[in-house]
Amino acid sequence: MKKIIILPISLLIVIILFAMPIISNHLYPKNFTLIPTGHHPTSKTDITEPPCEIYITVEGIKEPLPLEEYIVGVVAAEMGSSFQLEALKAQAIASRTFALKVTENGQKAIKASVLDQAFNSKQQRKQKWKADFEKNEKKLQKAVNATTGKILTYEDELITAMFFSTSNGKTESAEDFSGQDIPYLQTVAVIGEKELSPNYIQKTEFTLEEWNAAFNFRWTAEQFNDIKLTRNASNRVQMLQVGHNSWTGRDIRERLKIPSTDFTINWQSEQNKIIVTTTGYGHGVGMSQYGAEALARQGDKAKSILKHFYKKASITLIKNNKNICLN
Image (cartoon, rainbow, N blue to C red):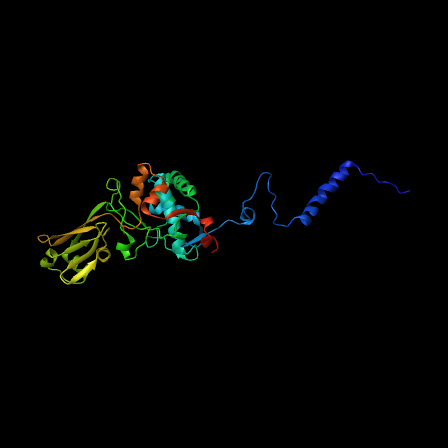
């Protein structure tokens, strides 16, 4: 007759606890995730899809930055902490979209200046804000975190989310700016900037010698009196003509390094100088930053602000855009 060995209960418990991990490894695959009772995933991505991580390479900075960290630095440089939270949110979404478009979703480097979009590193922000760093950083982080992953698209493609400082009361359409008609970059009215922007109206003075050097020929009093300005739908100068010579408004702005293409020219013969008066600051296409601030102050949310400036564009999420997350 065989002896029956009776093990103490405590020893049985130890054996069971030791065996459970081994058994479970055979029963379930390594990437299996236990789902709490009552949770019903809607797709496979609910369990297995990793997050869509994007890093931005900024020219002059050694290590690539996580997208959202980069956007904090852009909003700090492009708009600053004094703006309303909803304006900052709108800027964050526009800048995120612009960065992804320029870098081809993180594949190329981006300039840290207005040649692409301005950027302040954390160290630069500390130097700029000094004692107010913590307060300002918290505000900007709040704006960026509230919009994490949000982008602007048109027909499922990233838009060219152009923006600038101050309009002249209207934005300029892409067609008037570059000759290319873009549905989401049309002329729209902008109110409230005159009271907010320090750059709304500016005067720039030139000596006759400086003026001649900019145009590379010698102007006469007769030519100044013969200036003809052709303006577009946003009241910006489309063409300046003097006799047989003509220049686009954009060419004049670049030659004279003036703030805007909405300008007037005043030749003062007695002083032998020229005064150019400009309205607005920047190229004028897309979102006016001080226009966004004006809308935020009247109670508009970021979504409404963006819808005003980028007609027909949609606010979507990066994670829902396969063209971005597959890169």
